[in-house]
Amino acid sequence: MTTALTRPIRLDLDSFARAAGLHPQLVRRLVALGLLEPVRDGSGQLWFTREELARVARIQRLRAAFSLNYAAVGLVVELLDRIAELEAERHTHG
Amino acid sequence: MADRRDFYEALGVSRDASPEEIQRAYRKLARTYHPDVNKAPDAEERFKEVSEAYDVLSDPETRRRYDAFGHDFRQVPEGVDPQTWARARAGAGARSGGPGAGARPGGPGAGARPGGPGAGWQAPGQEGVWFDFGPGGSAEDIDIEDLLGGMFGGRGRRGWGPIPGADQEFELELSVAEAYQGGRRLIQIAGPEGTQSVEVSVPAGVTDGQRIRLAGQGGRGTGGAARGDLYLVVRLKPDSRFRVQGRDIYVDLPLTPWEAALGASVPVDTPGGEAKVQVPPRSSTGRRLRLRGRGMPARQGAAGDLYAEVRITVPSTLTDEERRLFEQLAAASTYDPRKQR
Image (cartoon, rainbow over the protein chains, first blue to last red):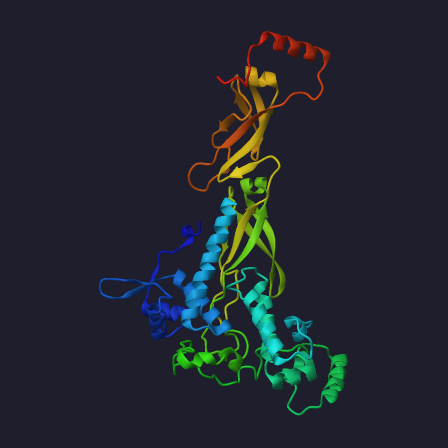
């Protein structure tokens, strides 16, 4: 239902890093850790969606507040997403 | 905010709590109220309060000063005697009572602590760009949070650049009629400056679980970063008449036995007002009569349908005349609904 609100704007690594307020090197690291999943085009260039800005902000907040390492952040993010999914399902079927 | 909650109270610990107790209380509350875990709009404020309380009480020196001077401790110069301060403040309060009486989180001195391991640093000449080397490897044994204190971002000591705010969720309860009609609604949302009224435009025909996005109304960002979004999650209140399934609406249609047997044109209530429904002859209880397009309106595509479900009812008392006619019908009819075909 929120998909209608997404903007189909792609950001390259540098614009994404600037928009997120992070160094491109750190963004690359988050990609390598599988915390962000940009699209890689034929020439190897990374493309990020706008939603990934929210994702990276959440990663920063969780990491800072609970002094988690990136592996743990990945787990927490996945669990939070799964809980949200299950709660949404319970509401529509229950 | 002049009336701030006592930091011990915010953490739910006594004034003589041990550092371990304080940390345990903080950890528990942080897990409960972190804005990415708890989507309620007031959770963020609670989280900030708890984080600030922990920030102050986890450091023995700031805790000692907080105990002596209360929320104003950051404005008190080193080496001042608490009683002298209290007297001076009482005098000043009587004279002015103006601004400056409250503590200022993030005021001078708050950001002065140097970063530790994992804090990262700002690239020279590149404002707003931050490196981060994280608590990798061996640094994991050290609780960075405790070394550096406090909450994320905000006070410039954590080594993070600006962090956009979290998205928040708020349940919006609507009656079926309200969801059907849509329109403007005023909702009250707890925020940092107390309860805030926000006018929301509810599209006609919202369904249960649908999310309405209010861009930039969510959690606050830190360091000048953008606010998150606030999502209103629609919850339809159960209605005594209308049962909503997706875009379709079901409503009971009480009929007399003769209307059901002979057919009739009867009025039926819909959320959009009264409608006429043609009951075909020989309609039994449970038969669904569809009124196309009289369900929930849709922004795109066809509106849902309304189904009137036949429910045959008999009078609770019969007049002599009615009783005589029913008896006559009973004698004349061979119909047996319990007979297998």
